[in-house]
Length: 211
Image (cartoon, rainbow, N blue to C red; front, side, top):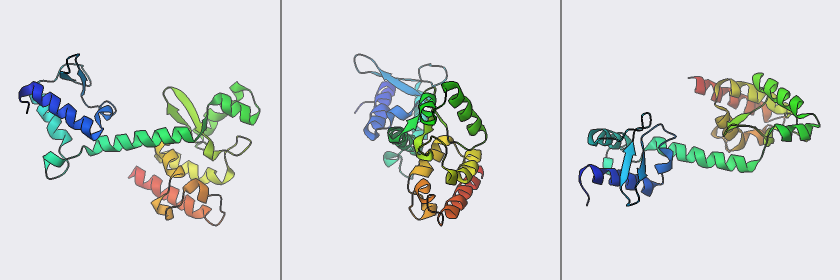
């Protein structure tokens, strides 16, 4: 078993790699590490890039193992959440979206007109728009064949977009929701009898987010 600062650095890195959570460190604003050609691990501060000393490394280790009664079997819950969200985002991106050009083509308008319309609708909270790697994406589930927002979703989007991160809105609207008995919100909204239930669930989610 390795010991000392270098050994501790390796053990911490190996533990996170074993959990499949190492790639989430940067997203969580935590120190990250790199390996030399010989495999040695060097941890660096997220803000300054300075190498962590033994005390700072011990603090990081303790923080990551702070959930649960037994640090040996602890799991960094925040990193697990970030990993899950990264996987969900990847699935959402595969599910379908349009950029400005895609919106313009579907609506049969110019690129500039599409860009203006998307921005105005986002400001009015009548269109779900997400940012991804510097690009603006419009998820397609919310659009009809003409590229306009489905009318039944307008009253659902407004309260959500006023209080909830757009990525989380995308997730909630397209996955089974506990508040709807496991139904997918945007699909349930197509049923006039279910639409009021979806609207109330959206308001409840928004209020919970504000709280």
